[in-house]
Amino acid sequence: MDDMILTALDRASAPGRFREKGYIAGVLYGDGIASSIPVKFQEESLKKIVAKHGTHAKVRIAYGNDQKTGFIKEVQRNPVTWVTTHIDVQIVSKTEIIKMQLPIYYKGENLLSAKELRVQPIFTVVDVSGKMDSMPDSIEVDVSAKELGDTITRKDFSLDPQITVNDKEDEIYGSIVHLKAFGTTAAVAEEEVKAEA
Image (cartoon, rainbow, N blue to C red; front, side, top):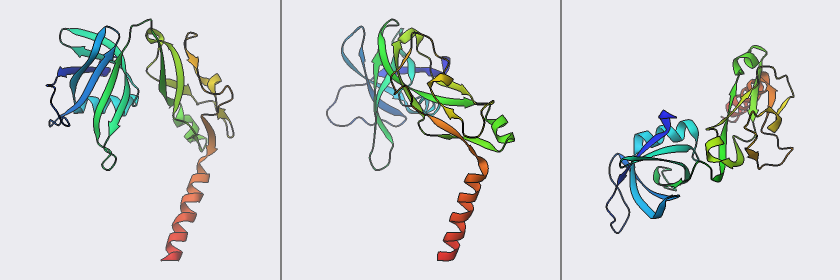
């Protein structure tokens, strides 16, 4: 989890919107924090974590001489540019029950490609709840043995028994489809564009 350590630095409370080049404004709140603490995070570090682990990533916060465990609760973005402007990080104890959205990652896709198949995602995250110390950073699904028409369901998840999936029991997160279906669709669309021109 070393790649998920965010350093939080104090920022001066001031009226108006916080803007400092290279930093993103945020707040820390939750376990062991009497009132929310206005902080700033290095933009580059935050971008890497969100890109790899999603907007609800579990993180370790280095603040002062201490490290705390928490997760990104909310990411605010500019509605026009979609640039991140503010994040909220909730600090939790390791035994606290939390709700999170975990990103789904697939392994074995190269073996699917060899069979001219691929994963067609329907949902990219899973709603779960459980103790913080049992919460994984993501859900990894092995699709190497999947065949055409197979689906991805909670039965494909290898989760700690203490983690509960909050989605519908029969939720389908993805399906295995033929690569040619995508190629054909793209080719048809391209021909339609040429015809219209």
